[in-house]
Amino acid sequence: MPAPVRGDYWDKVITADSVELTDGCHLLWGDRVRVLDDNVGGGRVRVSARGRVGVIDGALLGDNPLLEVYIIDVGQGDGILIVTPEGHQIMIDGGNLRRFQPTKRNAADFVDWKFHKDYRTDRSTPTQVNLDVMVCSHADQDHFGGLSDLLSAGDERVGLDTDQTTVERFIHPGLSPRTSGTDGLGEKRQGHFVDLIDDRTSAQAAVDGTGGVPRLTPRWRTTVERALASRTMAGAPTQFERVSQLTGHLAGFAGTPGSGSDVAISVLGPIEADIAGVPGLEDVGNGGENKNGHSVSLRLDYGDRSFLLAGDLNDKAQRAVLRHINGLTDPNQRRPRAMGGRRGQSLPSRITPC
Figure (cartoon, rainbow, N blue to C red):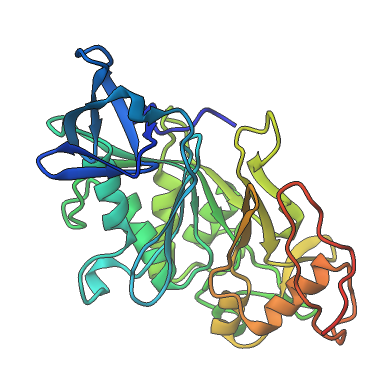
């Protein structure tokens, strides 16, 4: 995995409970700062943080950043920003489109503030949001809307301060609202949906409605178009990736020495099946239940802490995830009791049923 795309936003962290930076602005334990001058006299250093510059005691700086997980208030829907200790930025969902929000704000506004004002002191030059991973848990507007806005940074109609968003990898579950097919989700075989977008080629075909696949519905199509048009920091096309339980750990996030990050992120769902040689996702209900149930579901492990980030995972799909974790194949098996494990430990192959 490439080095974090954070740029030169910070290099030290605050190790005191609280320290005043300037004009009543206090930094807290774990806040990240950039050292501008490490020799201003008396053991003090000049740093930038929270969009400001000040002088603090150099003894209050350390080298071990924290894992940051921001759960952003977007009303209905989800919006999560993860900043790993190494500086990788991972965005999961973003709430509804800004224009449909009662506050006219969503997760894009928080990320915009983070990169435009929190990380920078010089805002006289163009700024950009740099994301290592953007995850769209599923194709409901109260989840993809904020991502679509963020991908449109620089468009005056969106109204963000940031001029551009770069994305190294765009991750999605594949199941997409279509203009035709069962419940508007495309073709179904053996009880599974098989019209899944995957890489850039299949996503472009679904945008254009070519190759015999039903076209994507308008707002989701616009979001996919924006993801396809996005670029990495190096200027290459953003990697477009469908994930499932077969993915295992996200590339670069195995949480082991040399993997790129101390944070482990594994994909628990959706649960993919082989349907005559093509991937399929089980029909678990109506259109909304299928989109929700087949959300990208992630487990994040760091030290002895674990987070479940599961979009709108519903009961039937959750049972499928638990069956997979426990190595069970009988859909009538009673739901097992979920048990966690520390990073680096495997979950038991079987768990005692409730």
